Length: 279
Image (cartoon, rainbow, N blue to C red; front, side, top):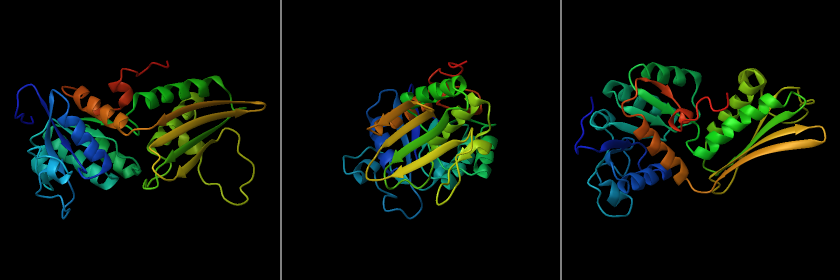
């Protein structure tokens, strides 16, 4: 089992320490009682390697040196919080599984083979993976499932998401979560019903499809609308995030919730006690 330097605290490793989410998580952990920053990871060759992470962030020393040795750092922690990229996240999943360390994954854009590796790692450690870690979005997911079940295919479903201009994947992980919820509500497979590419003469919309529209611009943190459009009426469910701190707080909650959990794949509905709330 992972080691703990201070009794009664949960040691947490933050991957991608120099990123926006990484820095926000580090600040949150340093300000939260009962947890400690056990490590800060960056890719090999990064300018921050070897520096105290607090100093690298422009503040005072935090007593944690930024490292690229993920195996060593994760081995001495109780949780890893990871908002990086799919290729890195699957490697961290393998290492967290070896260390029996809780792995919280906020990364999106995974390919099927990546998800297979994460599933394999979850046989050895608890993994909490979610396209979005805010309470509001997870409530929106439940509502989407319920409304999709209540309204038949006379209502077209369109998921519209907006993010900052640095986001590299589309649709967003949250949009896909919402799409899965809508498909489940309708008793459909999202793979079969998803409509993502519209350009040129596309023909009329296919009945029952779930459409996706992605907007990228400026510093938009995250906006998601689920539109149910029928003849003569529309129902719109909406969530707007104005501060990334909601995601950081959710991830930290997940890391603490995972302590002592058996190996397996979990999501934020489990963490928030909302699993089955729509049944």
